[in-house]
Image 1 (cartoon, rainbow, N blue to C red):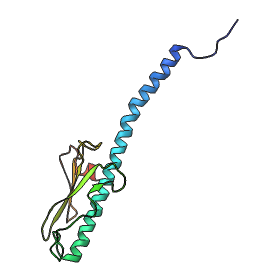
Image 2: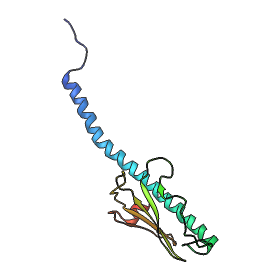
Image 3: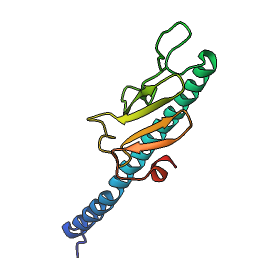
Length: 142
């Protein structure tokens, strides 16, 4: 009697179905992991710029302009700082002699657009905030 070696069509279809189910579970989890990493990069950038603003204040005794009268200029305005693809714009939200606020806004059309955390904010007292998102400050800034 001749014996054939190989897989039947049913066995191949079962394996394809299992791979499809695993992919359907793993891919969204992977995307969520990437979003969390991009959020962490934006938060690190915000904290770095808040420290820059404190150093600026120490040198100029004000947040809005230097001793020569030139407006403050942030050393970088997008995160991540390295690489071609950017996910957040960071802007000097408002500033006076004694106050400042920074905002990190997800870039429209990027993978972070419509993120659950929305726009990150931080001010001169280190108060962290959010706007336009569905999660709370403690969920997003942790």
